[in-house]
Image (cartoon, rainbow, N blue to C red; front, side):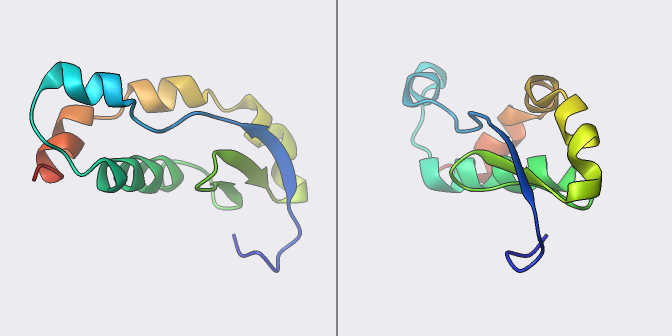
Length: 91
């Protein structure tokens, strides 16, 4: 979805991985890279026309508002292979 396309703000979600979690698994990670990878994978799992932006705000094309509101973002995040993402972003 481009900024030029009309969109409706649906909600805000927390998708970033907390520093406490990163510390609990040990190791040194590129936290920004981890968060970017989570955001990229989350957006890849969403229908075209629904987007989570870097600040956590969820936007949808006007005809996808109901679809976007029905998405279980917590489940999408829980289903992600965070260990794999962390493995890809170690320092």
